[in-house]
Image 1 (tube, rainbow, N blue to C red):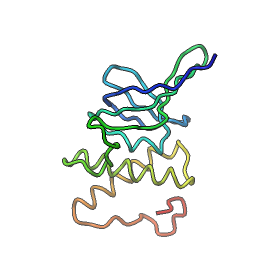
Image 2: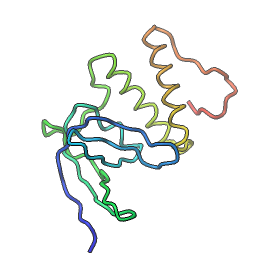
Image 3: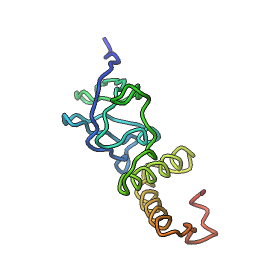
Image 4: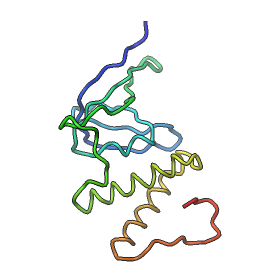
Amino acid sequence: MGMELYTTRIEVKYVNPPREGQKKGSVKAADGKYYNVWPEKLDQFTEGQSYEVEVEPYEFKGETYRSIKRVLANGAGHTAPAPAAQSNGASNEIAWTQEIVARAMGSGQFAAADIPTLVQEAKIGFALTQQGQKPSPKNTNDDEIPF
């Protein structure tokens, strides 16, 4: 008999991009449990926020894992907020970085191994915009970065 989907509320402690060679990132809840999340869905989570999520448990090599299938609502009962709604600088940088990485990964032109480079470049772009500068590519002939 297979494991069934269930709904639970989690408070997000950490949002982790996929490790090198892995397809999914993870969310660590305040209770210490980890939930696997596809990279394009990681930007739906903000550290310190609560969410009601649909979870699909599965077994792999005798261990039970949890994978978030979708976010149903945040702690207020509303659809999860967009990361850009954050108010402080650190959260804005995180939201900026998550959005850039999610869009790049959603383009299908990058692999999980590219995420550290994408994060680094997004942070540089954020810092430049905070200084009133427009980010510009290091090399205008660089075909590896599509934006």
